[in-house]
Image (cartoon, rainbow, N blue to C red; front, side, top):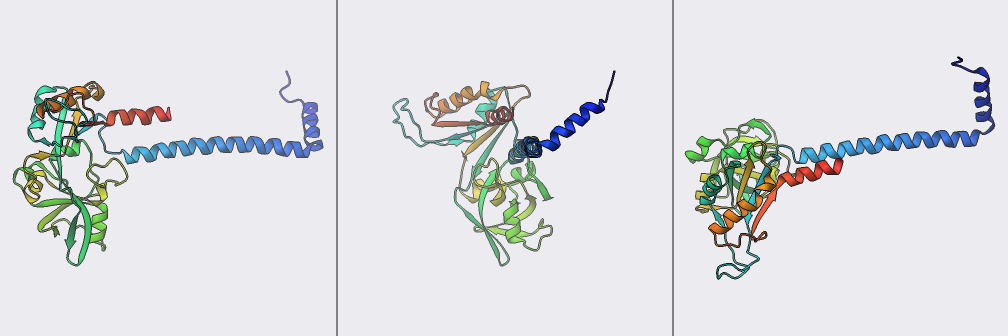
Length: 283
């Protein structure tokens, strides 16, 4: 059996040399097709990496719950009624939805504040969290630490600052932990710098422009009382969040005389669905 036929090789070479233009175009077409295939595959992988980075640190089995004006009348109340959640709703969810793991409330100042250090200043968003929120949305700490449970219990006047605030207030760089800065009219000690991206999923403002306080401190400083703006929830391992979304909405709604089917009155943002959409997109 011949593995190399010299006559056939000469015939192929003769054909190529007699049709140089066609041979050149055919070769270029093959090269261009392979190049575009590799380019699209590489671009798709890069796009996927970028999206994963934007969603990075966010628990894939989580949901966010918040209140809006009602869109349906209920129990004598007209639609369009304003209402808000409170700290009792956290305990209600823990008690009546055993499938949930972490239930962490969030509070915001709801007005753009101003952070000042020496002669530098920066506009900022201010939010109050509990320590367990770090298990739902993992911070990217480059200096110091995140808010912990003792900060919340002892109402310590400490803060974690976002990347852009850090760059605005400390343009020379270095570790800012232990330094005091003023946010609006109150002084706080910096305990950490969070470099989490401001381009991903953000609630209450961009992460890189946010100053995070212990929730107990924010409630006092901004007179928020027992109000809760968002409740962040994760499910136990193996729990499909979409299977308990309607039940969580119904429980919160009934506690505030809101129609349990009012999806606009009680908003539930299921991040699990978002992650599934991204996976299906690239599949």
